[in-house]
Image 1: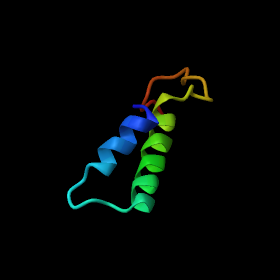
Image 2 (image 1 turned 30 degrees about the vertical axis):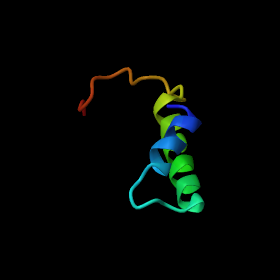
Image 3 (image 1 turned 180 degrees about the vertical axis):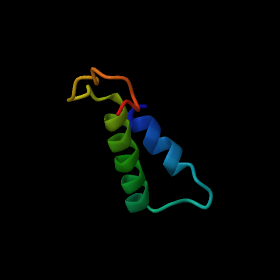
Image 4 (image 1 turned 60 degrees about the vertical axis):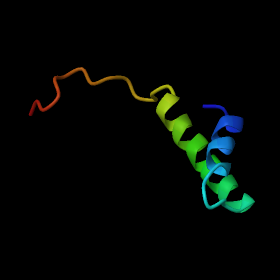
Length: 52
């Protein structure tokens, strides 16, 4: 999602949100998107999940 698209989505709310609220929501959305698309810093586990 681009910043322009996210801003348009939040600006289209009814009743309209203030510019400050649109900015906050846009920044939050873009920050969450970065978390979901980042390259993992840790390598995957070499052992099965749930192994004791």
